[in-house]
Image 1 (cartoon, rainbow, N blue to C red):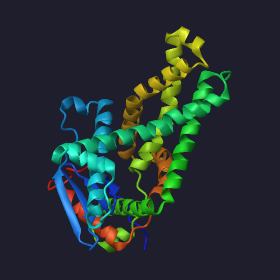
Image 2: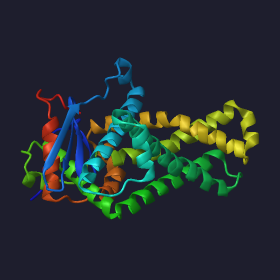
Image 3: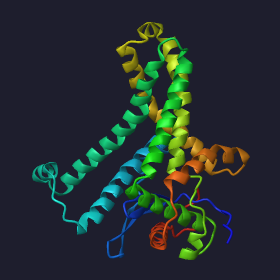
Image 4: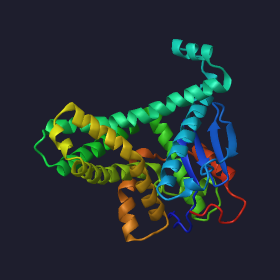
Length: 328
């Protein structure tokens, strides 16, 4: 049976969890997980994105706000789904877990765990995609032009990212999470195609979606090459004495800190590009989204029917009552 052509674009977006799916609509957010006994449990709450005021809707700023909100809520949902799955297990607690429970209780413990997860989730990408490429580029010597060096460093960054995606996709636990990722995409595609949300209709949809977070991250990698190259060249022009430090520890440290300061700008530019591409459907946007679509072959897998049921339940839980309120 042929796939249906998308006839509308929705702002409803999701995230694969451990044995579940997070779905965010314009008014409501739903986390749907399955207990070991195959029973689905639905957790709903109001969507809080863009509740920061009018300033958070301004171009450039809205990209950072949206990214931060998505990461914070996504991390919280992952922790919820992990606790959910662990309910039936009797693994002994580590000394660190015991120490946390002794010194923090209730909401305080949740906030501490959330903070640790956010720090971990931020530090690992910085080490892998900022520090490691800079370290590898250090072996090239100091004779290369600055822009060429940044381009090579950017290529290292993309290669590390692709290798990370590939090797994580081969892990058994991650493989199952990527099946839920596929169910999320298929369900949204079915809804956008205007078809009834049934297992049969969802199953026939493609598991690749042009507005996926994986595609967003790949575009971030590409945009970072351009932004870092141009901005660091301007920095050297504005501070001529900085070039005299090339090859030293202090030069590398300054450049690393400068790139970290530029990350919000990179995220904002990527957000605006994805926002524009999501509203258009032409040859240029197809070329623009093609690399991200290809990458989703590694980050999504074909789901089983029980996972599709989770996706359907998650989408139905966040559908707005007003017609067109979820338009992209």
